[in-house]
Image 1: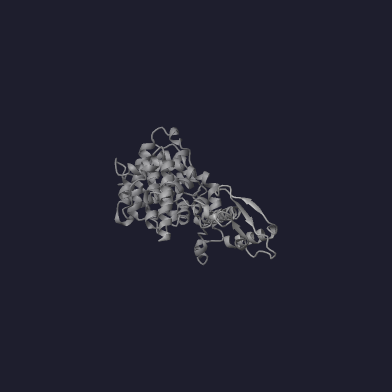
Image 2: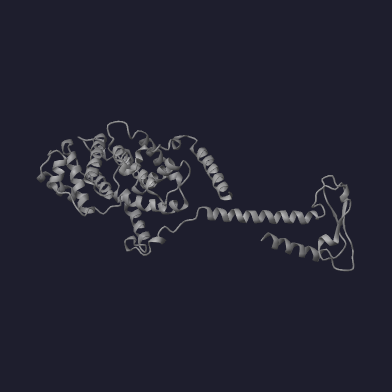
Length: 390
């Protein structure tokens, strides 16, 4: 591109220099550049122009015989070319990828409808949320009791080898029920096992029977009590089980992040820690999912990984994720301590790749995180460029 522009510029200069010219050039102590007035049309500027007093130049520039205005024009064109290349590199560096192109032949991926499905999930996810202060209306239970219940249910879920979506729906059913129905503490565990029974009926192929939940609760309740609570819960929730939990967003956002098993396990470890914490109810499911993946990426890779593809599909920028992500890092730091270690024990096993042993992304908690992140991105960019040039 540059050579073509230079050639065109030289041709134009030939046309405008038919008459003898006098040009003052800086750097030659007042010496002049003159053009010979030959009868023939000069073929090139190098043939037609000579610099008076070149031998007197102190700088010894080999390109001193090129008129200054031509050099300035060439430098200008070089700068334009560099700007074009830089802009192209910026566009190519982090494009928005088509994450569904490889699933066109998979009928279960429903590629034709997947964008509409997730747009619908985002539209109705607020209906699946509960008030972050609903415990204020409970007189006999509190958020600590809720945490103990959910930590125990995570262990029950693991023991029964249930699907991941069953756990998320179980917690959602519990919170939505407790928001609308006052419960005494001795019935709280009954609410938990009944919620899991309902979630199993909705999600699982092979459903544990009522007696299994009676046994797992050490026969604290009878089968009839479980069935009576089931009737109360489905009527209170008006049989609404089709709600978008963080799980459905996790699957989509992990796909956008082009995740591997390591990132997937750590992301689920982080978000399951959030299930236990009452204070995390203030965040919608999609934000929890995006922040969990964002936090896991920083924990594993220690530099920016929130790509334009992830931002496009999650519809959250890094700034929007930061508050939730910092809380997740705090939960990660204390995961193995205290009495509620159900999630930590689960993910500290070979089945889950010992994901719980990953180092928390502590630098996300620093006040100057933006400066740290900028420096890390620069180092990563330099390393990437160096590897490409080797």
